[in-house]
Amino acid sequence: MITIREVAQRAGVSITTASLVLNDKGKISEATRQRVLKAARELNYHPNAHARHLKKRRTRTIGVFIAALGGLFYEEILEGIHSVILQTDYEMIVCPESRAPSRILSNRQVDAAIVFDVKIPSDLLISLAWKHFPIVVLDRDLRAEYVFPLLIDNASGTRAVFQHLYQQGARHLAYVAGSPDSFDNSERQSVFLEEASQHGVQVDCYQGHFNEISGYQAARQMLASGKLPEAVFCANDQMALGVLKALQEHHLRVPEDIALVGFDDIPVARYLQPPLSTVQVSRTEWGASAVRRLIDLLERQSTFSTERIPARFVPRQSSLRHPSQPSL
View (cartoon, rainbow, N blue to C red):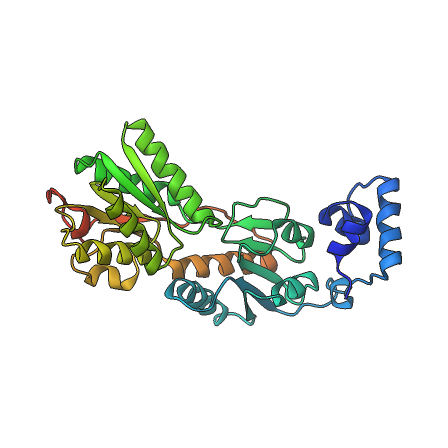
């Protein structure tokens, strides 16, 4: 089936421009309009019938496009979405990373979408979003008409981590990064490095991928370098578990030799030995807020609030080198 992306490529325009022409919207020059229409005719492109009659029909279904179904992180977001859906007459469909999301999105087979999958292109989301098909993104700071970002307050949580470690006397730090394409990792890393620069603190950065094994491998690199930091901040708790394992294998004490902090406050964090300092974010409330605000927009045309989801630093024993601050 020919897609709008192919029409746009044939006409030499963006997907957004092709969408505006084919939906008879926006102010597009006549020359460009004719070029897009010509490309559509040559490719025998026909808009999906469901999309064309969307104003007359509603599915009362919210599409959730998520990178993976496995893992506690995504499960808690889905749990929050589902808890709100159960209180309404809406349904939800969940599309894990595959070719299907682009097809379902392009054909607008749902009334609205919640997206947490960086592999879905931003230009596709911008081209599809409109009054009768709003989209909430949890994985990027994308701002366009009827596209609404709902993000974690990474900055406040990360600043609290830095201040805590700095007040503990740490002046040589390490940061274990998450996946390079992650918006949350990018924000956490940039804020952490900015705070360190302002305070004249050295930070060594190691690349991870938000899983335990990558944290373990990053810690092995630290140990091999011979330049051990006084404290390590990991972009999530899973990597902190791997760092902790590697340090303990080398008979290094946490926090006496190296302090350790994660991000997310996964359930196991408080039961580790030592209990893990971390940044607490309610992923269940994140998912619930996304769908609650989205349904309010659909039903009552309410203004979508893009206020960030709170992130709260939780100090525990893993980072209390000078335990004057109570752990939680």
